[in-house]
Image (tube, rainbow, N blue to C red):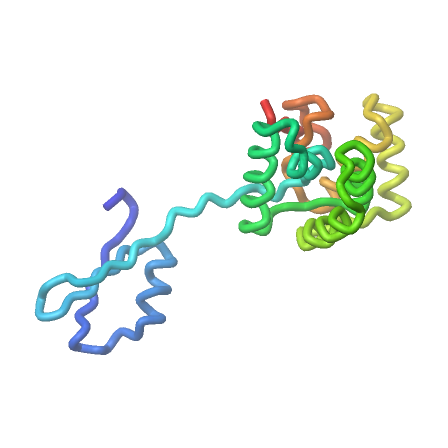
Length: 187
């Protein structure tokens, strides 16, 4: 048992502790051992779940999910997408969904119907929608920091959506912009 975790014993024959209470204790970090006639027969341990930070996925991450010519990047992109989908920490924007559709139908020659279905799937992530003030902020990121307008809009939407990280291979890896870190997941 690791340090900081307490252990609770529950005796089944007493029937005084409902299962929901035992599971709640395990969820709170306690190890639960159920005994019958003084002998342990079941144990609930808290699961170790690392919470991923809320993360913005740039277009290239989604495109690599379909790019069979780059198997290592495809595998990494699929893993990233899966992790952030399961943990509900993934964010995209309307811009990213649009760019994805155009990129995969033009460059990868993906059937438009299939690409449309994938856009629907990606839209199950949190989708950030820009306002006029977001567009103006993206223009300022371009003017004052040298980002392309489109990268500026990605950074702005990530900030507006509460993301701490933007995953992109197209921007300056490691740079922080307005509290958001740019990370190239393919390095």
